[in-house]
Image 1 (cartoon, rainbow, N blue to C red):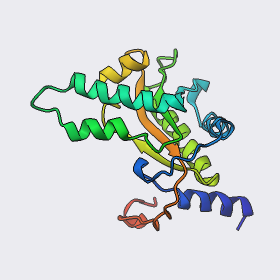
Image 2: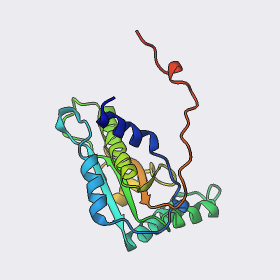
Image 3: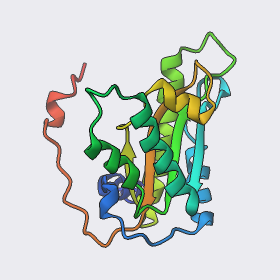
Image 4: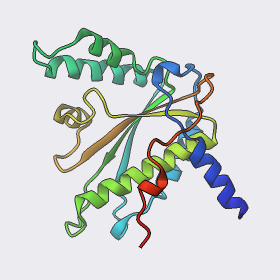
Length: 194
């Protein structure tokens, strides 16, 4: 096979989710995070709208984001739904993360392009970033919990109504060996060759 194919296939098959508590706390150089963002910027985009956007938290800002995230949860939860454990989890989610990135779709000015396509393009940008992280030996977690999809998060981030948060990315290093990959449904059950 083509050497480029083998390299990219290896990176794709090696990518794993590493939960934030499994990170080591070691800091990633900001320059490497910029390299990952440059890879994200090469995602496919219909009409060159380039809808992917990232808010990057590093250093003390990681802790500040986690404090804000936990506070949003506490403020927005009704007393009967509030869970102290969930608050604590959100508060400490980034304790060992080097960087936290909020990935969101910024709706473009071409209404003829469906929002779904803009979300798909932003998801491709996130995947580019995650694959680049794997290639650099950086562990990653694409989180969607807590307040990620709540309107209060949009307000906190100063996003517009039509923008969509697609996740909270936690980046760092991990000493833990990545588990073997697995697929539950055989590929033959997912493909109908016409």
